[in-house]
Length: 208
Image (tube, rainbow, N blue to C red; front, top):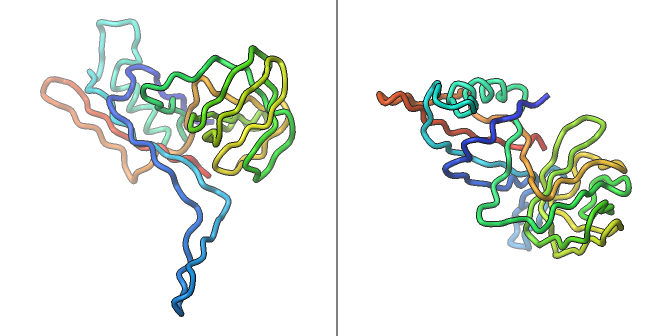
């Protein structure tokens, strides 16, 4: 089970990136290069936190403390971690209650059911699919503006192609997407200043 990382404080900076599972096969004889697509494209993100005290006794919100972040990140090296995915300056329209309406595997569009008011999904916004069978989450991006009718069904184009099979009833989170994956790096280090503030940076990459 992946470790849930604290939600406070929000990262000081974040650098999302896309991991391309495919590649380009170059022609030997001067012909046209060939694109080779493979299932498994996924996302990652590098996070940098504001300097924090190792132990902050001035607040009841103890997840402010750097010691909590460090403890959970170390566990995330082997167990995986879940973190809110950044979309700076973007407020997802509405708060739809959406589930998968049909079983889907390796497709780039999914049938969904909206169990709330009508909402317009916007091209480029992110969403998280959580498999009910395993609890594991996958991050995707909406490929085109799509209207979800109130208490109705629609087909939503996503990218990359579906990796974890979707089953009817699986939850799709558009309002507060998260990224789940392994904390990357051979070691996890953090700096401790003489002011007793800890500087923490880390990277999460989806498992694929």
